[in-house]
Amino acid sequence: MNIKPNQYIFFLILYIVLLALALAPYYINNTIILGMEGDYVLDFSAHLSKFTFMWFPVYGVGLQNMSPSGTGLNILLLCLIEKLTGSIPITNFVLIFSIYFFPFLAMYLVCKAIKATPFTSFAIALFYVFNPFVLYYLTCINQWNVFGVTVMPMFLWVILKYYHSNFKLFFFFGLISACFSFTYSNPPILVIIHISVVFSMVMVSYYRNKKFILLEILKKYSIVIVSFIAFNLWWILNLFVGAVATAKEIYSASWAHSWLNTTVSGHRPILARMFSITTMIGINPSWDFFTWWYSTMLARLITLVPIFMIIYFVLMVKSKKTRNSLNLAIFSTLLLVLFFVKGNASPFGFIYDLMFKHLPFFYIFKSPVEKFGLLYIFILSVLLLLIMNGIKAHKYYKPILCIFTVYLIVCSVPVLTGNIIPDYNLGSLGYGSRKYKDKNGYRQFRESVNKDNFQYRIFSLPGVGNYQVCLPNYNGKKYTGLDPVLMNTNKPFIAPYNGIGVLYNNISSAKYAKLLGIYNIGKIMINEDLIPWFGIMEKESIPELKTIFDKSMASKKWENITLYNNEDYFLPRIYTSGNSN
Image (cartoon, rainbow, N blue to C red; front, side, top):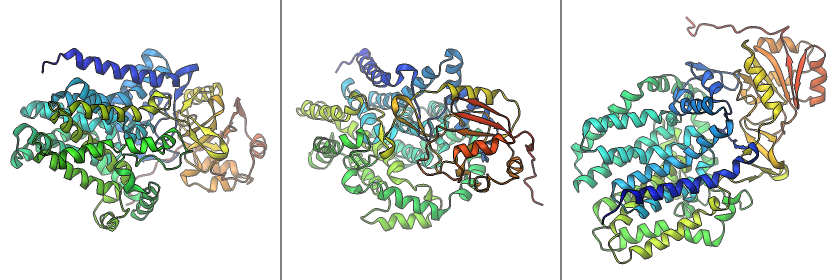
């Protein structure tokens, strides 16, 4: 079959256009996509300035800096775009577009390397991004996590392309790993990515040699491991010497097991949903568009197409093109990964519990549905690619491709209907939205604080009882996520989740200003927009808080934000030795 290169380019451009049209409505009226845990940065230059030190302020305390999270290539490029354009919406669009584009591109390159037809390459790459699991996973827009979806097929492509050239394999694997180093800040994802590298190495060895050659696999794997260490040594030591030790102190095994039970129970009935790849999506149809759409009978039936294709062609059809040692091995691996996806849910959930309790560091997989789910989707996509490529000369290739196309259309409905990142139901509070519009008061407050050269902490009031705040925002909907006001300043701040309850319990005390000074608090911010969706820590109302601080502190006001100055009692930072001897 003579395939012209521009046929591959056509489908790549088609995806780019489709994705751009899906994201464009989020940028009308100077709005951007923002919210939840990882998508909070409005000023990447300020973000970079906070994360260029070995020890950085986070939530008002401090943490060992996992360097890739703050100084990786992603932040440097976003800073450059921000400086060149001077536009927050453009910078934000580039980030969001990249999150959805690069996984497609990586899998598309894998398909091309295996010589799949242009349409098959497009279909498999689209499946990899638009399947229910990944499409919902990407809505968190946490760039330090979601690029793991890109890295796995990107590494597979490098191994496929340079398998027989040791130097090129070493160089390009290391280069790609360094470019995406920021996605390794989450240790469980780092482990999942390396498991995918082992899978890719074994799979490519068989694909290139038509058999498994153990010594060759070990040699090639040693090359990529040495390459990974050589290109990433600048952050590896910091992560494992400092951050892992810190994590062991913060996250106990008992806490991790409690989290495991919560996350797995939240996805029940998990077995019935693993085969439809909807394990990430909740079961309450009223939560958002995804939960509604995938609760319909049509979606429930159509989402079983991929697993039925695999079972049919790998186990039932007697064809060497699809029922061969490689596909059977991948299918067996898929079943093994499925066991880990379900975590400690039945059946045989006690095995996962035993591993969780007794296998060193295994408790990092406290969210198995999410973490092992990424590996499951990657392996499933590779198996589908090999199956589709194996039957491309068969008489039922076109009917199967038509059925698979229907599946892709059904899974694309959230994208086609403008719900690629849907609004979500907050009950009595109304609806939350990722479409965010920055207020003038917020922007003016940040500019004022960032221009202040003094170093101090900001005390956040009212003390809402969740690390994700809730704010009224664009079009009558709510913003939920990390505080877009304080998180985008160059100052550390204290909020209730820092665990410093004494600051919220003694506000009415006569000597409260001195207490604030002891904690290095130079300013107190009262944001009247904060909605107490998880309760309030202090007993004083906002008017009462203002009355208390007005008596002894000067203030500035920007719309609903008031900033009080604690300069009379503010104490500068005092550094102590880390050595107690």
